[in-house]
Length: 116
Length: 113
Image (cartoon, rainbow over all chains, first blue to last red; front, side):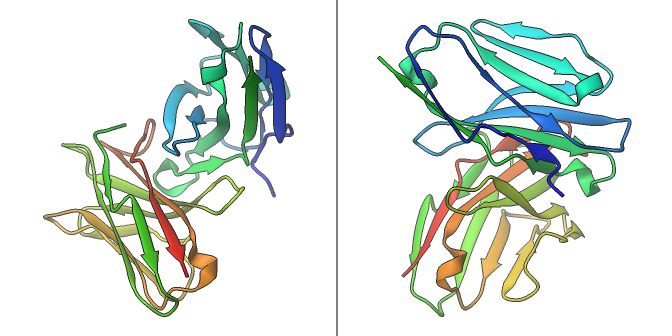
C-alpha cells in the first residue's frame, strides 16, 4: 500500500502564479516525520522542510509554505508567486518510528513546470 | 547537501560487470541509508547501516546487491553482474542518529549498457 500519495503527477503554471502540491500520507504511528524535497533537473535532492507529528503549526519560508493537517493526513506545499527556477520534481516523504532507523517512504513526486 | 559525498557521479557498466558505489557521510554521521530511484519513480529505501553493522536491508534485492559501512572509509553499495534493470540513480543519506533529518548526497547515476 502506498504510504505517501502525491496525486498530481505533473503541474504546469505560468510564472507568478501560486501553486499547491498535495501530499497525503498513511501511518499508524503516533510519532512520525514528514518531509519535502526538491529535485531540480541537475538531479540532486534538496531538503526543504521536516515536520514532526506533534507540531501542526503551519510554516512559511519566503515564498514557500506548508499546511500540515493531521485530521486529513495531508501535508501540502504551496509556492507563492512561482518562478522559473522552481521548476523541479518535488517529493513528499514520511518517516515512521516503525521503520528501522526511520527510513523514508517517498511519494512518486510531482513534476512542476513554471513557464515565463 | 554537499557534505555527503557520493562517487562516482556517473557510472557506466556493461551487463555482467560489477558496480561499486561509494558514499562518504557527513563528518560525525554514523548512520547511512541507501535509496534507489528508478526512471520516472520516487526513491525507494534499500538499506540502513551503522558503522560495521547492517541494521535493515529489507529494501535490497535478494541477489547481487550488498552494502557495507566499515569502521574506516566510505559506505559501499555493490552490485554484482549488473543487468539493464539496475540502471537508476542511487542516493545515499547520512545522519547523526536515528533519522529525523537526513542529508542526501548528489547521487550516482548508474547506466548499464
